[in-house]
Image (cartoon, rainbow, N blue to C red; front, side):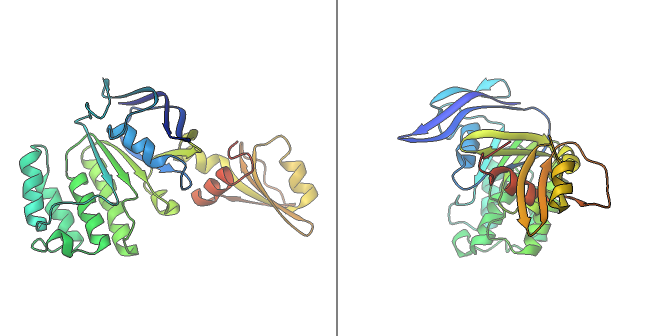
Length: 282
């Protein structure tokens, strides 16, 4: 449903996207990760048709995407997005009037779970509550594609847990593609099904989360044993302490041994190992 072919975006002397190609055609929750300045927001805005590419082709549902031809099936939300200074009740009514597919019942359900005051005007809300309203309207939009750029920024831990539960519920009740860009990595890992990692404007990894769980692990022990056991494997990072060596691996699993310990990497550690090494990738 989302298809980018050899897409590049250049701002003056800065290349935000470089020969970027990806196809996303199955419903589910996609986690987009990248360091600050990696090109995440540019990628999301490109899919939504908010910016025009320098080179390459972008299509959604088989139709070309451009700023003058923004896809109807996409709802894009930025953290800094704003609304008219209306009450939440008025905003929901306006959203329903503009969009016949808007699910008012689901929107009211979300508002209740987050204890949102329907009579309170938008500008009177805290930063976190404003972000929640933006996300609430997106999740209730009925669109086939939701793009959420840092949606939990400003949320407290309870709000984040509720958000992830509702996100999972939303996709389960009406299958859709949801792309979530976030820096709170291990939390989104609990609900994400696919992982997209971008680095220096290039696609670094596009993989099923289950595959990462299987192939990403650490091995720690005396340096000579760890080095021998991991010879020929894809090493993401090394940490040395005295005569001990710890390695982050993204490859086939090795056999257990009493010479070293093996542990599954968290998604955050995997991401750091992948983009933090000198090569910036594999």
